[in-house]
Image (cartoon, rainbow, N blue to C red; front, side, top):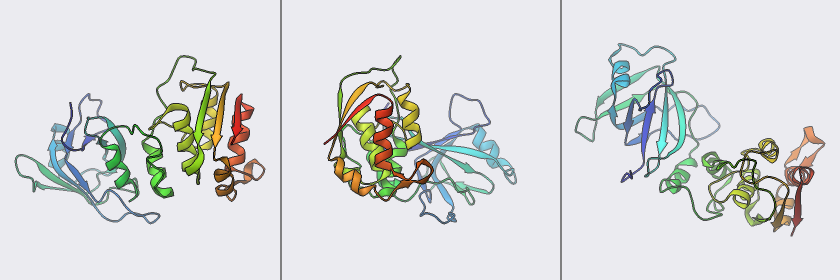
Length: 260
């Protein structure tokens, strides 16, 4: 089922249910600057509440620690991301959108909110998983990190597929997030990752994703990453850069890395 616009589902982790506790059409105040603690309340606009949410709103004061998970859905109903909100103080009123909807204000939802840069990233992903590579290339580091958060490592394959040659477009691998995005696209395609961190790349080389060593990786424009990441040093690994460590890691686990 496709929706005319993205929406949000509300889930109570404490309730083992197959359906959400409600859904809403938009959210205000969710995206916040970093690194300060967010102080702006979150406004859930156009909510159609199910009974669990209605029961909570009927209480004089929500109990401290009442959590709810806010899941962002794309226009096809696929879950893009999820964030926990702490419902310590809640206000509800008839929605500005009318009908039987309500608007809910969470005055102290906690710290777990996406960065401002995620707003544009979510909009791009709202039509579905990106089909073209490098759609993240124009983003700054914060935006690339938000893009990386939406990627997945699947699909998985039994035992994985080895062999063959994969091509990494390194033209935009100018920071750690860009390196990880370029590697994920090279091995699994747009919208995928081969690890959201350098340590998880190591884990996936042992199996899980549908591509596993041995295989050949042609790293195009490798000098761009070498220069850009020279200052990103892993002191606990002997002072090597992110670029050097990634190349060493891949080669150690059976990947033939051809720097071009």
